[in-house]
Image (tube, rainbow over all chains, first blue to last red; front, side):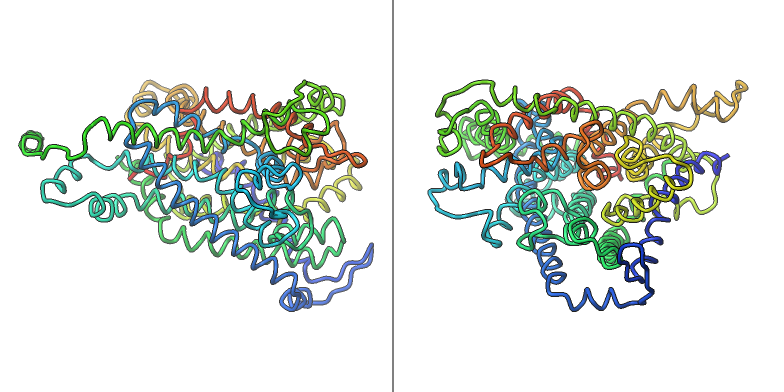
Amino acid sequence: MGRVFLAPSLGFMALIALFPVFYAVGMSLYNIRGFQQEFIGGDNYVRALTDPNFWNAAKNTLVFTVASVSLEFVIGMAFALIMHQVFVGRGLTRAVILVPWVIPTAVAAQVWRYMFDHNPGFVNAVLGTEINWLRDPAWAMVGIISADVWKTAPFVALLLLAGLQTIPKDYYEAAKVDGANALQRFWLITLPLLRPAIVVALLFRTVDALRMFDFAYVFAGYSNSVATLSVYAQRFLVAEPQLGYANALSTVTFVIVMLVGLAFISRMGRHMVGDVARKEKR
Amino acid sequence: MTTRESRASVRRAYRPRPKTPPALVNLLKLLGLLLVLGWCLFPFLWMGMTSLRTGSVALTDPNIFQGPFSFGNYEEVVNQGFHFALRNSLIVASVTTLICIPVAALAGYALARLPLAGKFALLAATLVATLFPPVALVNPLYRMYLQLNELTGINLLNSYAGMIIPYVALTLPLSIFILATFFAGIPKEIEESAKVDGATPFQAFLKVVAPLAAPGVGAAAILTFVYATNEFLLAFSFAPRDLNVQTVPVFVGTFERVGYENPIGQIMAASVLVSVPLIVFALVLQRRIVAGLTSGAVKG
């Protein structure tokens, strides 16, 4: 019975996700030109490791991931603490906080790209600067990080807020009686008890940042300035088709995302999955 | 229970008076609230104002309150077929949700309730599958579609099905996980009593468990719908130009400029047209979305 219920899901995922990955790994071992295929073993991977643009894409992905996830975490935590305090308008704030999350990333990316554009130069006017945000690679990176932080810090706040609400108020009162100040209460009660929510938020954000395509593509197309691994792989699929190499790049991206994801899940998986299993025993 | 209550009341009696005056605290809370609201909404103000501005001043002056204002940009994006992109997005996202949720509900129920070998490994694998990067699918699926076309004449490129099929595969894992969490939270006794009354396991699932899990089903459905309206990479790769299938993210994300004209006003008009329904969607379904996003995250 259980197998029958699972079969459609597993069959679908195996056919549309698992099989294509093996297909991609297989093709990454070939040099493909038009209709000609030539087996070249690991040469595409060697090429990636010696390609400065690949390392540039890897660096961009790393910078983007580390900067945006840490900013999102800090700002999201601040928002969650604010929303946890406020009792008036909590429902409204919770609803509004979903608005950036629900807007398609490609649409948000266009809006932010034009805010950073020097013509009409809205961001420059607000900051009183004269920066060419879209042409200079370093400032373009600042641009996509800002846009991503805007879009997803509220999402992080929401996950953390849900976690905050599960912490019993008694703990704080007891700590207050014992003379703990606000910072100590945050450090010794909130952070440790919030850990499951923190790990989940970081997992989803880190993995999403590592596989990000939309912001980088809309801001700079296939140019190297902010190209992430996904953008760089897509470039050899569409703009300059070299399918063997493209598949090697997408396989590398796949492996990186999965390894990072697995590292997170091995830390929390037993806890989360165990939760479902525990309830079932009841 | 009683001792805990009495202890709490003792604590309450000894609780020191707050040092900061309540008026100041309330003011700070209000400022915090305004900060959060402003953060989330200010780009929409810019977007809305920019979409209404026309003429050369609008393209060069960063002051968003500088006119002239008109609905000209809206007329132009509709003339370029933006309403088709909206329709395509709606169809693709709805059909994805309609296929994904029943299939995921069966799997989630099996994982939460039915006797299965290796259940733990299956749940863990489901969680890992949510991490799948779409870029790994682009070329293999493209080739599979081409081969399918050669063998059977069915063309999935530039079709709704070509997008819906990978979207279902990519949204299944998270939906299964959310639904398994919700199913596991329903007391087992309810279902057992249905079986005692002579229901088959399938009837028990359909008539008793599924309605009780409705909030979880709703939450998973909303997340699937949002994912499918959001997805850019696969839609851009499989249905890039054709207005009959092109979705909103592709329309807005790859907006072509014609000649030397800066299309900023038109892009913002298109962004407003897609944002308004999605914002209403988020405001109305807020509770369900929060439940879906946080299930699993905060329990236990």
